Amino acid sequence: MEKWMAVFDDMRFEEVKFDILENSEIDVLFLKRRKKMHGNIVKYNDFTKVYKISLDDGTEVAVVDFHEMDAFFENNNILFQNRKGLHKEIKRYIEFSLS
Image (cartoon, rainbow, N blue to C red):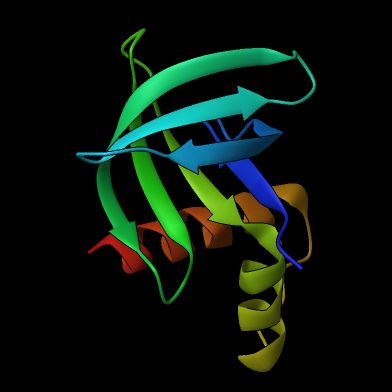
């Protein structure tokens, strides 16, 4: 089961659903705000389930399957003691996935 979350540059998270369209276009529904936005997929990694998306309003977000990321952290014994450590590991996971 997948749990897709948009991760913004300021490490704010929001649950999303999305539909991939033609020519790397994507429609993203932000569930909490009930707002649908259109954008383009800049980069993606199907193995780690991470997408870098440029939305039409100029915002870039990473869309990550949090279940996949959590399993990666558990399988590799990645531990963090506070929120700052968690944010650092999430950024590293996204950067590693898209490099």
